[in-house]
Image (cartoon, rainbow, N blue to C red; front, side):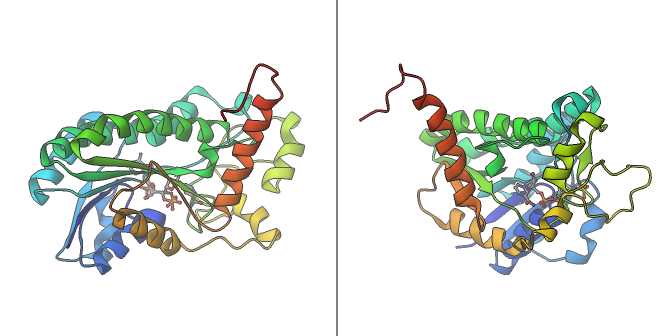
Length: 287
Ligand SMILES: NC(=O)c1ccc[n+]([C@@H]2O[C@H](COP(=O)([O-])OP(=O)(O)OC[C@H]3O[C@@H](n4cnc5c(N)ncnc54)[C@H](OP(=O)(O)O)[C@@H]3O)[C@@H](O)[C@H]2O)c1
């Protein structure tokens, strides 16, 4: 049985791997990208490319309506577009914070809102929210990225219960690290305060954030420290294989951890949270 997918941020990184993997299965894909020309090299009779910046709610609604009109039905909708904003909470300005939320949280919210009536009407479908292990735990300097994905997960868990009676599934795909532009050219930074230089060195392997004016397009950033520790991040195709396994499940779960090392990170974060509660004498773990 062939499926039709709708994928945001499909031009590079994970979104591109999801797109090529779905096409390789014989599926149809409505792929969206801010600049559709960046997908010219993927031309395929089963691929439709639409322009979409997920921050623009009116355009999101138009584009999702167009996608359903063109495709007839959409079986899997992947909210993938997103990026990481890095900086201690007091290092981040309002515009940077709003843009992070507009993209990672509101973008996925607008797409989910726009798709919900179509999915209810067709009586089936699967919304996959590309989340992160950082939506279970948190990391200093990644507070706003964490917040955007925690917010994504909060509304999506409620949405899952709302849409289940209509035969529509929602899954939070909690990904570990994958080798994309996420930790490289896509990453955005706050304005570094000297007070956090040691934290930056410890977490990012650099005492200062890169200068946006001087940084070449492909400058490695957070990836540098990962490389120094000889940690090799998995290829995006590994995430795509995990996504394919997920959408093949007849009853997909609300949460699915995907990626090497990701399960351990989630287990650690959950245990830390449990330990916090257990230190409260009024808290008792259900039998
Ligand atoms: N890579 C990882 O380790 C990892 C781990 C956990 C979760 N994730 C999540 O996975 C998703 C994809 O990231 P990636 O790793 O593939 O990074 P990437 O290689 O930097 O790709 C990010 C994609 O998001 C798109 N995008 C950004 N802002 C957008 C907007 N306003 N409207 C539409 N598209 C927009 C980009 O489009 P442009 O080309 O136009 O910028 C690009 O296609 C993100 O949500 C990320 O948070 C990644």
